[in-house]
Amino acid sequence: MNELESSVNFFSALIVRPLVCLLVCVTAWADAPVPGDSARAYLAFVNRACDRVEADLPKITRVAEIAADRHIKGGILRLPWNHQGLQDELWGRSGGLIHIGTRRPHKRDRSAEEKAQDVAIIGWQRAPVAHKLNELKQLKSEGIYIIGFGPWALPELTEYVDVCDAWFDSGFGTDDRVVKLADGSRAGRGNMLVDMLYGWAFTAEYIAALTRRGKMPPVWQAYLYDEGIAWGNKYFRKVQFHNDIEVPPQPAGDLSKRYLTHIRALGDKFGREQMANTNKAVDLILAERREGRKTFCASMGHAPWTFVCADEGKAWGTNVDIHSNLPRQVASYMRDSPDGALVLHVGYYGTDAKALEIFSSKQQRVMYISANTERAGETSLLTGFVIRAVPEDALVYINMGIAFGDASIELEGYPHRILPPSGVMQLVAYQCVNVEVLSRMVPVPAP
Image (cartoon, rainbow, N blue to C red; front, side, top):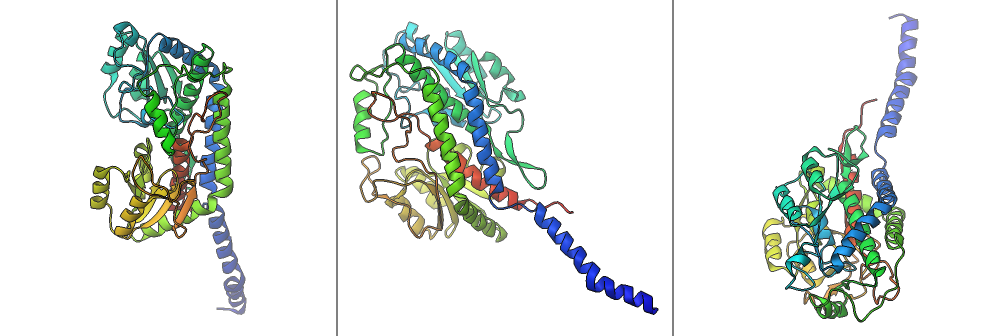
């Protein structure tokens, strides 16, 4: 090797190669997912979903007017069961309608003419998993008005769209993943969120349409309050409309716009205040996965069983529905959940003594998606268990930011708020965790 070659090799080793390595590293860092970015992308979708539903308010109001007229003639809102989440979301919720579903009519002895005035509400967040087409055709032959919710362009729903009298489109076809990941794949489902928003906007406009006809249907007060149980007992299956409360006529679109504005505000608040906690949960989930273990998700509520650790979320977690006041679910949880597992508990307000006992008995490490409670230390008449705040030493506490009592919208003349955000925010908080985990699981493209 001559002197010139030796000098070139020395320069290459000393200067060029380290510089190339640095450039490669910088490129890789630039392409790597930034913690929180995927969650913020999902929160941006929440705002777009609210905008979509609000832009459709004229149609929502028109359909709600039809349903209100049918209700006055003795009809009810039915919820045909299809093993998907919208019907569960709308059924038996604080701030929702007391008399909704075939098992909860305002009276038992309705005539055939009254039953022909019924309205069926049915939604899909994915392709049908239960064949209900013939059932819907039968309902339609009986004069029942059918409202469908979900992805209009999904091929598996074409015949269902055709049988419905009205359809509220979630805007997706075969793929409702809304967050793009580093490798070009996508994550974070959108159908269920849009269905929920449409469902509550429809409920708002249905109530408003009835008030413009001089009627107010009874609405649940949260069983979080002991007086909520007494309220339900007072009206359940007893009256079609209030004869003891007067609510002034509500302008078309007002209640639903206020609800959608509230959801936007909750999403924005979550983005400002919960990214650090979300990222902490994701770090723990990824560390668990590196050890070859999945996170065990313990969900409670109406619809979480249809989306928690479903779809691509199965890659990192396994879900089980658990309500600590249901012995059968507790027995299943005790049998099936691993001792010492990392647990993501998707709940509502604080927790309760029984849930804490379950987690402790299995030495599980628990992260919470929940919200603040005003009743810590009291005993719930509904469950019989002492209500607890999320423990101060919890591994992670992701606060959904919803107000205690759930229902969020004041209605002039009515003694408690209507329209709940809790189901929506359970989904939003979970999806923020989900997309963050998935974004950091994917390989970063080579430069």
